[in-house]
Length: 78
Image (cartoon, rainbow, N blue to C red; front, top):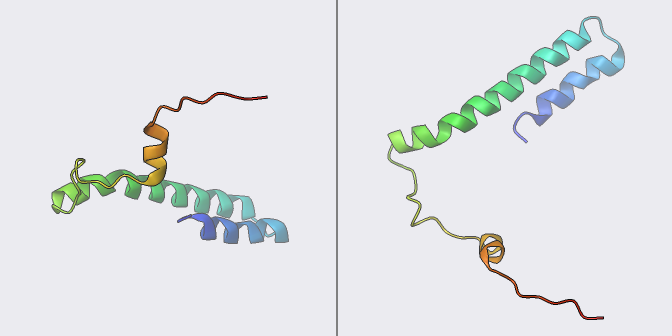
């Protein structure tokens, strides 16, 4: 959701028919997506560098993770 607002705001000139609105939209879209990808991929590395990352064995399992890991023996009854 990080880049959603600028992208939505960049559609307003497109709808209004402003000159070069497609260039503005493409530029905002590219900057938003590249920013999210760059920050998202660098975050684990920076966390390890700052010694604030959580080791894998300490990470908490969420109920959905536990439910998906279980093998379910179910049968369908008519």
